[in-house]
Length: 195
Picture 1: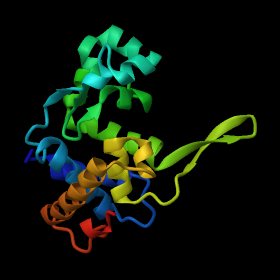
Picture 2 (picture 1 turned 30 degrees about the horizontal axis):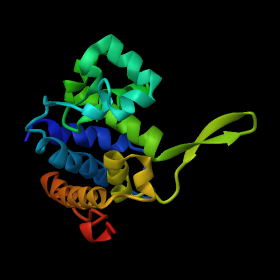
Picture 3 (picture 1 turned 60 degrees about the horizontal axis):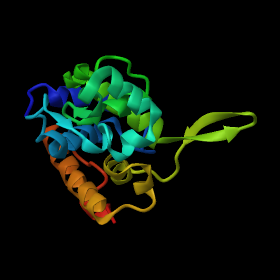
Picture 4 (picture 1 turned 120 degrees about the vertical axis):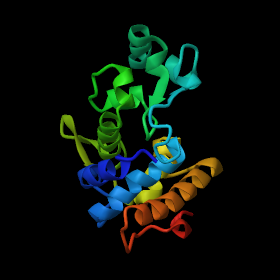
């Protein structure tokens, strides 16, 4: 395990705005648990994964003018995921990151973007308000739902594929292990709750 990853997760956990009723300790365990699957508990913290669906000719590339502009600017790096959480560059860009894709190999930088992505895109939703829009909490989102949305997109909150449900169950197990690693007790959200 990347030696400073538990401390980093302890510092980032309180920045998550949910799930409702979750403690800072649980949020920290959630973030550390996520690295279990995404980067072998941070052992592959600097791994870069090329995501073919986001590259030239891929489904998401073809459907997103923003992504096409980013790939034109940064080449294949804009179609990759980075860091202990394997955040896609375009996912970080969508929540305000404007650095170079390679900056996301820094665990702190990528961790901050993971928290921003979860807060802005998963735990909240944009709704029409008068002539404009506003952010409001997305109801009923627990840790398992966040894991599903991280792996399968927002559609996985309602209709996850079996592989996404399996991913979330593994992540919930990792969260329990992360709580042990962080020497926490009483972590809510056990694998049995992922159904």
